[in-house]
Image (cartoon, rainbow, N blue to C red; front, top):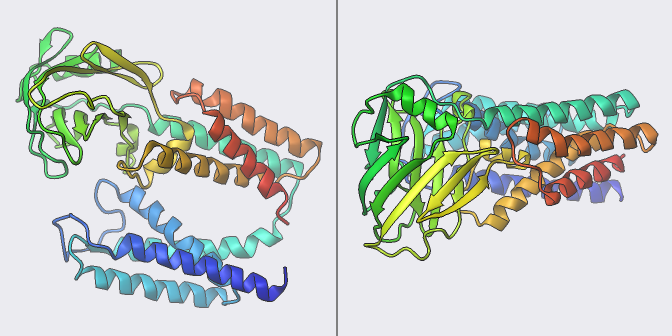
Length: 388
């Protein structure tokens, strides 16, 4: 490929990246907090998630501009001005808010992109670098397993029957009763929060009997548990024809997003006015959901679903979410393939990663890595191994 062709290719990458930035920052949302300026760096309950997402959003644009021929300091300065302009424009967009932290993290993304584009052609491949990269990827999988573990705080819990919560649709059915281990959970403070916490962690089933409401257009909680700090502990709800479970994860403690667990199509045959028996319990791995005597177990997170810790799209189809998970594993594979040499040591490092991706998740609370995700990991290693 000629230098001119490479510049045109990287210019196209920059253009696509810019379009994605506008897509994720300038469209109206349903958030009522419009026209607000936040002067914090890690803002709100998703501060770390938003920061990492902003860095990842601006880094590809920086890579594209730098590789297309723009000087590094000009790329950083231009993207700083772009981020500042976006934050000012967001003050006039319904549902949008502005934050100093967004400008800082976007600029960090620009610096990271320029640094990555400058360093990659100069990196050295070696046996040691390959094994270090392999160990880093396996360490990241262990960390993913850690943040996907349940985290139920030792606080005062409150049961909620079809609650009206601003972030969710209100379920227009009726709860008849809820209990766990013989303990009744009414729509007020839980009499023994410690016992409920222990039973949730111990795998006892939480059962809910309810009269079904009309089909929902978005997630609507049928039964939930929040605590005195207004933190979501557990939520069992309906989203169209899906039965959805939220449980508080360690990801929440780290200001990250948490993907939901859902039994797709479980409520498709349930009509408004039907009496239904819902439930969930902790299992290994993950959780089991139950509906009218049927149970679906193995609802657990895979290593590839870590993308949902940064930005999760619950309305995406199962196939689209699976594609994102495979893409995440491709990126992990490239982090190894970019450092290995095409020799025996390199093949051994690749084998360590692939074997570890089979074994490590099951040791740290994750679901077994699907073959399609393993294929993505292998493709990433192989593809990056041939990049100069």
